[in-house]
Each structure stands twice: as structure tokens, then as C-alpha cells.
Length: 320
Picture (cartoon, helix red, strand yellow):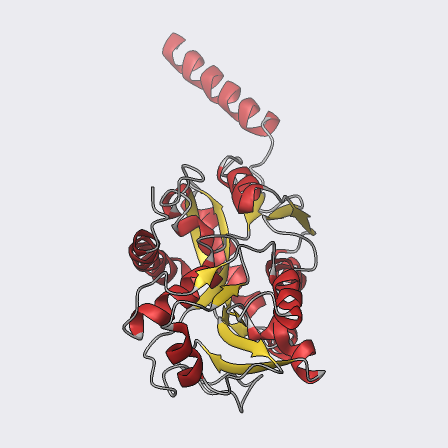
């Protein structure tokens, strides 16, 4: 009887504990933050804010987009990597995560994150001033081999620097043949181009579109595998005899260590949001190529991109 009383009492205690304990909340039960390591109004910010509209609908919670700038992207990317891996702080990882370590800027690499998916890509291009003597990619490349041309569009070692370095290396010259002048972004670099301060702009043709429409610059080529629907009359470098492409990419990521069930829910919601007509159309209207490759393919791509970036940056003498 004593044993029966004990068992019955223990059962009552366990039941009381279950009743008293709060039910486990299902993710997400509160707003989610996405940290953007770059400034408001820029390419990364634009892509994430477009995506966030659909993502908010799919998750059923508000999405707060916060810009954390500084340190050539290190400040924001560090904030993402060092956040709690609970799904409530996500980030907009950009290509810099693949070479921060290589150039000695920060102890950050793709393994610092759970990579959810790339969301969009923007190809590099070759843009010259309207009064430039060069009218084709072939003419630019041949002139550049003299070592007297210059380019800009990003920070030293950034994607637009690697764009021109890869172009020249593929064309049979040294990666550092074109002098690269660091810039704080596309806008100041393009103003330099128009004023005659640099020979070419190797950033995104999207950034050059307004000046091209105004007749102040000429977009000679795009570093993509196929022509862009936004610039159907502009040839790829491959069409112009230089077998080289470089597209900058923008992604959704999270601090490393997300619980698998939360990661799966985020990826599912992100894919549905990304595939919505509202998100697809808004990106395409801006000349941005939508892309959703998922966590597995994205992780493999990031590893490959890291290797290619390290090789180019070593050729440029920037790798530490």
C-alpha cells in the first residue's frame, strides 16, 4: 500500500508540474531582426528590404531591418556572427565573408554562420566615360595591358577590385595590371569616372544606369555568364573574347549553431517569400537577378568562392 501511495503521489506531482510549466513556444513568437552590414539605400539594403516584405508575411512576425555599418563590413558581419543563434537575429551576409580572413580584416569566414541561401546577384561590368576613346571590351583590355589604366568601385580587395583583376588575368596580363583606386562606393567612383579621375568603373552596371541614360558614361560589358535582361544590348565579357565572369552576391544568413528545426523553418519561409511575385518583380525591376539556392548549395558555393577569392587576392599582393 505504501508503494501504491507513493506512486500515486509522484504521478500527481508530475502532472502538477506539467500543468504549471508554460507550453513550449513555436518559433517565431516575436519579431525577427535582420542586420545589414551596409548603409541604408545601398544594394544590400535594397535587396533585404524587398525580401523582408515577403519574409514577414511567411513568418507571421514583424521583420526589423537594422543597418550596422563600419569597418568595410566587419562591424555588421561581426554583429551577426556574435548574436544568439536562436533565429531571432539573422543577417545579410555578403561576399566579404569569404575573404575577411584572407585580407586580415577579421577572423570571419563562411563557417562563422549558418548560411540560409543567396537571395540575389549583381554582376560586375566595365563602364567608361562617354568621351572615352574605348568603345568595346577588347579595346579596353588591350589598352589596359600598357599598365596605364585605372579602375574603382569598391574598397581595396573588394568584389569590384577582384572583377578587374580577374578580367586582366584571364586576358593574359597580371592581376594588378590595372591600378585600382579604393572608393567608398559606386557613386563616388562614378563621379571620378565622369570627371576623368579614373579610366573605368568595374562595379555594377545598375549603379551606372542613370549616368548611362544621361549620356555621361558607356557600359561596355557585363561580367555575367549571360546577358542581363536589364541591359539586353550590353554584351558579356565572354561574348567579347574574355572568358571571365564575376557576380557579387547577397544572402540571408544566421549566427552559426541554429537549431535544425528553426533553420528548416527559416529556409522554408525564406524560399516561399523569395518566390513570391512581389519580391521577384521588385528585384527584377531594379535590374537585380533573383536567386535562391538553399543552404546546402550556398555553403558549397561559398567554399568555392573563398578559394577563388584567395587566389586572386594573393595575385594582387593583398592576402595576408
